[in-house]
Image 1: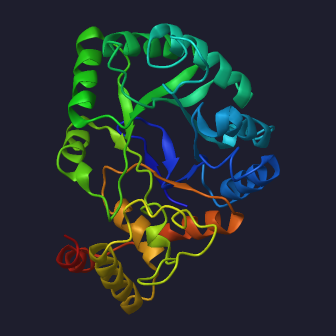
Image 2: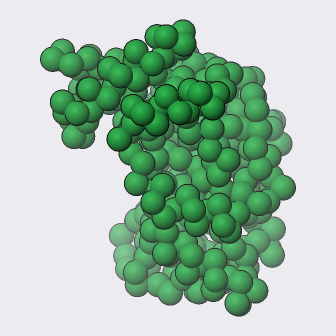
Length: 308
């Protein structure tokens, strides 16, 4: 496993991270513990979750799985989503953040969280209030670094400048949707992150599983797969045209499209860790091996001719 800095911080995170949004849904405690054990064994230290994943069970399963090995993991969790009924049990207010952190710490069975991320923008709460609460938690030692997820580029920029002018802790990372099939963040987010040293933690690197090799044109999706009941707009002629070109590119280089999905993202210096979910140990091992393929300049030039 290779490691990278989280943005401009000194924190070293694995190039491939483990996403745990399936914990508590498709994965039980036993499965979660096995997946985390194997992730640590192959060098993955970045474990990403949220207080909303699996109704809170994702954090709980991670806490159980990391008993006696907490120091091996970088725990990244999130706050924002609704966790209970009531006007103050969602969002990014000081009240909600201060209450939610205590619940997450208890579930995770730890006294600190490495990366605490704002999951969604909250239009009802000034970003200054949110940053102030996070800054207090850093000074209290309950969190080490802060980040955000699903923000627009201008919202990240605003937060950076408010943190700078108010002398508050600033976002070390942003977690956006990003893959070889979904490149929207290249327009504004990547240049912003490059300028200000914000690390990028892409989620859905396999485009909801479209890049796993499981799906073929004019064939029924395998039962039990992510896109078997809802293709999420992926099963279009243009997408299959692109997928088939990528498959040919990989065949010529004796690699898989799945490996390409990770190696293409990791060819970008702004990427700190690629967050990939797993429901089986085999997927963890497969994902971790993707870092072994480093695309050459010639490979990247050839891909530029393929990609829209």
